[in-house]
Length: 219
Image (cartoon, rainbow, N blue to C red):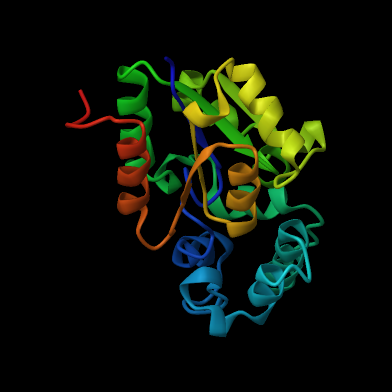
């Protein structure tokens, strides 16, 4: 019986933009402390984030507004999230990849598990060149990106398409995402799930590996 680890990208594999404000400010020439919105790390500081969590706006709408906000501060005229991310994270994105994610990916692969990314906006947010700068993505069997499929989580079709391409049973897939709505969507199609807490990444990946029945250290 083959199992699969299915990961969201933003927030799960990569550190969130909330966590890297200092890097963003430095890259864009902004004063320290300019960016104050903190999303899940301080919901009270971010009414727009709360609106997204309440399903009043979509995640894409949230980040489009943040792109506009930061563009205005930086004297830019960005209209796409990828322009913001590329400017903020520069030519080398590896420093914003969670080491806990790389460890879990290595251990899952070593244990014979299949690997997939199920993202609503991988290339939309990060730009098509981003993937080529992340060599670990070559380890993945499947990358489902709604930038191209146009089917966004939590639509059940997104999960089922990913499961089908992995050629495994839904119950043998461990799905990890930081958004509750996406977890509910995965639950509805029979996947096992980990609601990832971005403030405790180690715990999230430990839970996922436990569900995969993987113990010990990375080889």
